[in-house]
Image (tube, rainbow, N blue to C red; front, side, top):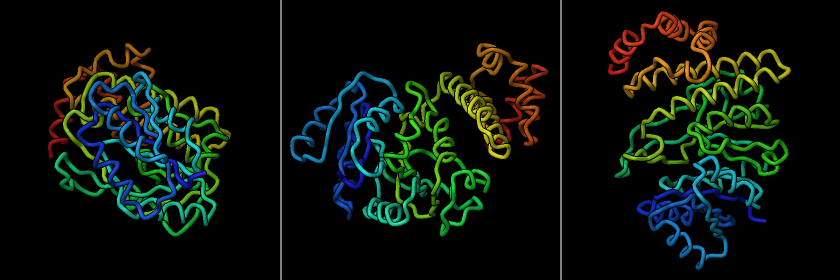
Length: 323
């Protein structure tokens, strides 16, 4: 059994694959496997993956019809055999000491999850800034927490690429992504954290995420709005199933953040807000959810939307968003 299974979903990233794989080969820990899931690529990505697999028995390639990043990661999890799982996007890369540091910490302290930091870079590899998901929270990086405690310590959501997760933990709780949607990690990671019995959050930057034109992260379309509502609804349903008042409150707040993000995303992308919530069921229902949020900005959003002042909200939002 390898120590780490590195799951790499691949979709039309032939220009970036060599740099991604080079960062894995540069790791100081060499007891790993790569589970590369070609998710219906139409460029030369599959050929490149097969070339790597032919030369290295640690690399397995799975070819499937397109099911989105979440579906590809699920396939990777289902086929992984490593003790721990790391997620690496095919246009990103990790620093050379990343997996040794994470594995030694996780295995020595019997951790279910480690969350670290990332930096974003552009298509040319230039740093765009530091994403302080852990640093901006009240988490003490030297302590081992239960996941519930993490949720209640001003925890900040991050992306699945910064999570190092014990494989048996994922399988024990059947924790999988919703396939075919955007923001699939937003829906799943709070559940990962909730179920974790032992978790650490560290401030080491171990991952570089590439924000290139045309990537899933930078693209804008109305499906992202609808998927944010899907995520919020899923977290609301999960919150209602949790027998813990404090965690229930956190999950409902997180769901409200998704609904608010949907509105902000629509305003920024020039997508008409009118009808987004109506098409998903009830405009007033989501206004009530936002109106019950402890966050003032969520209540203000609800007020604007309830009064059908969508254009005014977009104009005001753009003024503040551009500052």
